[in-house]
Amino acid sequence: MKHIDLSTLLKPFEGYLQSRIFNGRFWKIKTLVFTLSLSFFLLFLFNRGYITQNFRNFYFDSVLHKPQPFFFWDSIVKQGQKPFTPNTYQHGSHESNRTFRLTIPIISRVLSLDGLGLFILQVFLGFGFIFLLINILEKILNDKILIFYTLLAFLNVYTGTCFFLNCFGHGDGYTFFFILCSLLLRNPILLSLSLQLSFWSDERSIITILGVFLFQYFYYNLKTQSLIRLIIVISINILVYVSLRLYLSNHFHLQAADVENSTSERFIEIAKSISTWWGSRIYLGIEGFILPLIIVFAILYIKKKVLYIYMSLIYWLPILLVTLLVADTVRTISFTFVFWLISLFILKETVNYRQLKVLFLIISFINILIPIIFP
Image 1 (cartoon, helix red, strand yellow):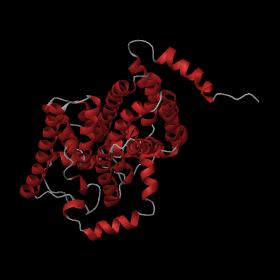
Image 2 (tube, rainbow, N blue to C red):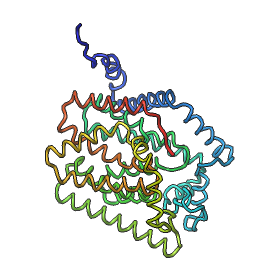
Image 3 (cartoon, rainbow, N blue to C red):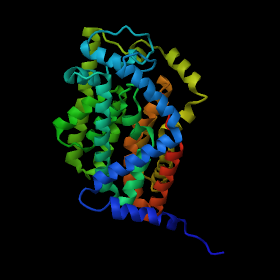
Image 4 (tube, rainbow, N blue to C red):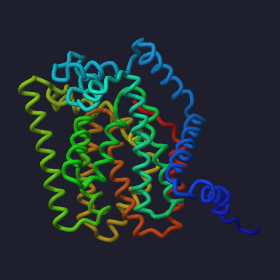
């Protein structure tokens, strides 16, 4: 029997992409719309009940103003009215941990946005995130088919869907957007603004600073002088954030429940309680992107890139530790998306086009089949 080349099965679809989506000067916009539409269709096909129920509750909470459990928009709007007033929420609750997440509450106050307005703005930031991501992928991959499959993979994992489907009010879309902006900005003032907005959206953003450094090093092929300037800018921003946070703690008595009021015994208790499901939830946050991560670490080991391995571990280990300490695995592990992008540089240099295409086709397929589940 004559063997069939499985790649031929994709030729009609890829032909359609080449002739109808990737042609013309507005191909990026068409790619954005087509990929997002395809992702929404597949997400609702495989996960309709879960998503429908969430938005039904969102409608009651933010449109009809009938408070629903686990929705936090009202608390964000309330925080924006008095951002420097200690909260009185139950210790360990999500609201009590938002004390130093001031970016979204201040946006709510400045723009006079309620919960519905904040979610709509998050959706618009999602379009901006995708467009910036397409531009990043274009420079790294320089191939529209590869861009499509990689983008499809991103839009079917929590990092890409949170802008459109997380209607609870966690604000991860805002955080990821500001992080992505910090990857691209080289002007010290604009980079600092982006970093501070991400830090004050979610303190876990500070873990990604090494990723910001590595990404700009690869993306802009930075030389020694530019690297030193980048290190200085990042270091100053960390110092500013820590100093301001200490100032707010000392002068306004603001505290984050899971940091200032917790003990090592409580952290150990949390870690033990989630140890039985920790791995599966982390996998739900990474999904198919586990494949390029494994391949990249193998490549670095084979090529004896010891420094890159150490830097990668310095980036990953704190994130894995935080997932244990706060029992928030899917959202926390999603902060590794910067490293997913960094891995593309290494894969592009070491893996041939055909294998790279197959790899990201598989990643997309895995991400499509795994239902999106967030807290």
